[in-house]
Image (tube, rainbow over all chains, first blue to last red; front, side):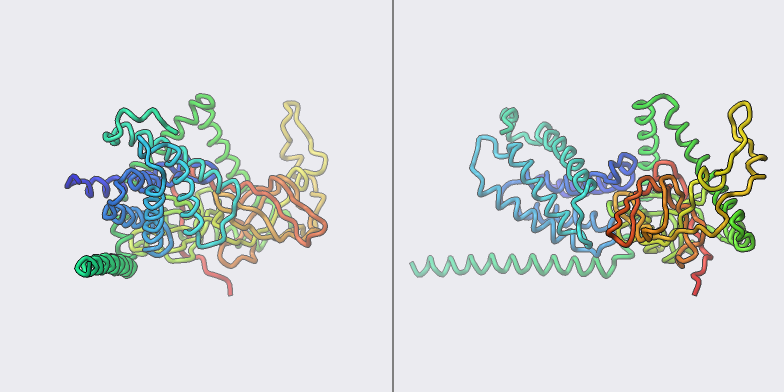
Length: 168
Length: 309
């Protein structure tokens, strides 16, 4: 692990948190903005090594803290939820069949959808409504996550270079 | 074999020890964060405010630019101006109608309170979360307290102060799912105030003087009360309007005297679709709220509005 990786991670989460709460509110769809912090957390966890639990915990604490700073809920809820989601994602990844490309798009998208749904359902203090807004938020976040997936693979997924065209 | 078994047990113990240690650190961290919650959030805000303002400005100009590109060159600006002008006119109509209905004394007091006696603090918007909560850049140091109403310069209701920190505050918007406000409906002016035969000039405009001389058809008290509930996603709906009361598309909703959290006659929204079912005791309606995050730069917190007991 590069020694300055944690610093870059913190700065990225900080930048995304500000972007989400200040810049993107002017690009809201039906009052929703994509959950950039969650997307970044998921991408970092998804592309991490199978046994890199320290990285997972670090990302969960950072992402959870920034999510809780911008919400009215108490500190800790997001940290615990993200830790559990991160562990579940890593566990599912180990159970999935080994492939030439360990990080195919199909795995990413299905795991991301499941994780986002789980996070949204569990983090709501009030009963959640499956209305237009709910689905808009899911779709909006998914589109950004898909972009993030390909950007990460293009610029950071050096180990998988040459195998990126195989999405499924 | 025994040696291997002992080694395995030791390894297992070590793993459990690590898990327990991790959990202890996690819960310690969560506890510390909650104890210092206000200070952490406030410090974060102070440190981030300049960057957030820059992002906010960039977002505003980018979205405006994008909107102009998508529609037409000046369409966005023109639309904004029309909306502002419309809201000004609605405020004026709201006041005029109250006077017409015979509540001159009450309206005068109310208008005086709104125009003169209310002390306000101007605050800039710095953020919005997904639960319809705004962040503004004024806090307890500026005299903000929880429960204070928040409006804009056109007398449009945004919500009330939910949580106050030293240098910033969180505003619960009327579209938040926990928000419930008493409102009253004012009938569309084309149906009430100008329902009589109005004289039109040659150019097609309504002759205001002639219209003023006409007596409105409905002189009885036609106040219809209901509640505005937040629906999330910056949307609201009207509820608890008795089925016997007649509400129509285009009716304007203003805060009611029944609501003790907000001053009377603050603009809330306009009815866009009435949902009436005779089998239900109350009717609902879709509302187009007047508040808009795209068009507003500053909000005003009313600091001296007292709840009526």
